[in-house]
Length: 346
Image 1 (cartoon, one colour):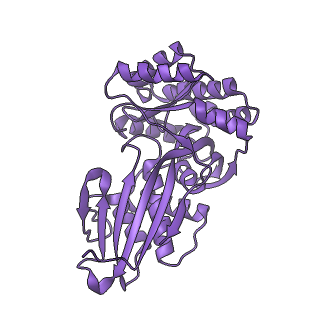
Image 2 (image 1 turned 120 degrees about the vertical axis):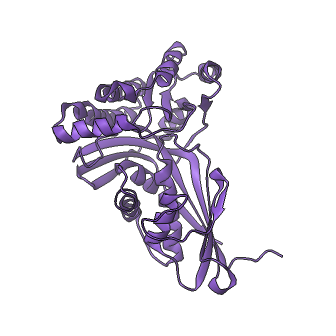
Image 3 (image 1 turned 90 degrees about the vertical axis):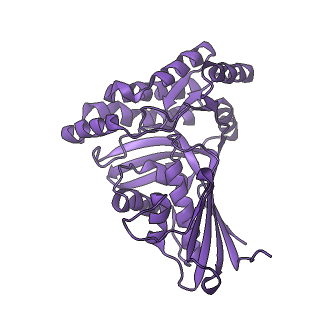
């Protein structure tokens, strides 16, 4: 008979799309503004808790997307299979009298450039905080998640993904001095929200996003130019343009802000907009789309957000046309998520 847990903690966090102003939420930009939208698919974390004496290992990780189940040693800087999960467990710790089974599953494919890693970290942090009797608000969760990626794992990371996963909703994130930022929720009417959800389309480009040498080259150039790099100016501006457009219910203006951002990313380095993204944009134009933007930093793989016309038939025809272009292209159904990370206990 299966052993019943003492308690089960469940946490979920949303991913993000349409991140106008991305690249300006980084250490080398120093200050910036990002607009983004929290959506499902969600990342789900389940923590089953048992008496420590009844389990052979203090922690078992079940990374369901990778079909991995293992008991990590959790030695700092000596990561085994999934550094982000292991580093988060090391950062938070678990009570000495407990053993935990951690189950993690993402409904979005790995490497979709939609902040899935940050959503995973935020959900796991929130679940472990509950386990440890800690109270962490959205800013504290985002700060801890960013610390884990940049300090413990020594990775490049902006701040927007963590904040979106923590707060949810439609956000304008203003970073006055890296990494300090203020999150302002973009509040719009139900009719605008419903139309936005109906018109947004998320397309997976067929392969995981790769943080390649292209990104390192762009970072090196921007680092040399400093906070006044002219390439960052239009990126910062498109975030405010997107928020203003949505507040006004002006979807054509929202779409134009996305296009401006998309092309500004190309201006950082032409390789940040892949041939596959260009192929999808060309198709989207034929079916009346008014906006498009590669998600995240851009480059090979990942995903692209499209803002379709206000015509359901055109949208469905566009999905069919895109998936006919390449068998690896995939429509990922989304729903707007007004909530950020959530935690429940059973």
